[in-house]
Length: 286
Length: 255
Image (cartoon, one colour):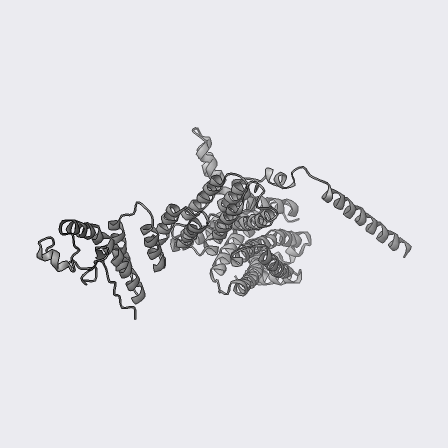
């Protein structure tokens, strides 16, 4: 009995010593507690070897660790090795959608350092994901929205949305978004726009999809027609000092072969106060 | 054949008496606890993490059973002299060995099936889908274990249990890094070393061939031809190693 009590006491005492040592070591101040842990982070090749065929699980563990790790930072601090860590995770599992998404999000919130460098890192990460999952439209769409809303880089957003829209199984709305975004930036001619909406219309299946594409196509043709008709009205006004009441006047005067019509075949109007062409878009939505 | 199956049945019974199924319970607890913890820690698709963890767990626990039990069970028969009682009956040595092997494989298969079912149910609970691809990946792990167990059986008749365990583990590790041996051949410029290393690569078991975890987790398509060749590869390798084990066992001095 006495012996058992003595053994129990020794065990408890040793346990107390072990716990005390750990508490002391744990609380000892470190010069660079965060960076030190990452300094010897193994490469993807080494981790792949060590995992013995469980690269995916290794990527999961590193991903979960990274979320805990970077949540310790204040957004004004330098997020240490952020690029390296998310590259490592996506090297281990190149199809890890969440790692690209969350990695880019963490990269975008840091305020410390050069914003251009952060942006380049985000673009690199998303490009890697888009390459790694060539059949997935989701990653490209996510990247496009991040570029549009977070990076506020419309050109990049359009490029990624274009990739998303072209991928198999991409919802129709992506093609439409791509067209709308491209219409809104420079370098996208109205002819490009018309060609794009012709493609979209060819693939549209539902009434709503057809109507939406038709509407965009209508607008594109209006822009195209306005290019020649508005200057013609200006010329006519300068010569006659009056704006024509209708296009028929121009036909009668030999300026036009026939009354110009819109994409749907309806004649355009003329706003006589500004002396410009007017389009009356009539699409049945029901 | 009947004698072989009788030995296999007894081996399975013996393994169950040794509470091998406790490992299955261990796996179930691991899945339950870690899924809960990982669910709290991760952001995004919990299902992916549970699938990765589940498949790694199935592989790890199956490997534990395959390596530990196979080496122990055969040596136990020899050391306990019970092998004499069996071989005194009209049972050939190779029948005894194959019976043992099949019994051990059945033990591994039983555990693996239970673990796979737990994993499928856990994935259903977390992601709301019945992912039958996990059963395919588990079946491929079983094929891998058939090869590993065959090696364990070979080492069990070649050497002592402890060394047998070490050798089998070595084969398991080498089998998973075999691709790097192939990479090595790409760095050797000329001479006889390159064909020698390449020959070693082709002869060693490439256990990564049975690894379809990534494809299953990410729902990628797998060419049926690849699956067929993998199955043939696994079965052929298993038979080859078992033939070597039987040859060695038939000449082994059991006294």
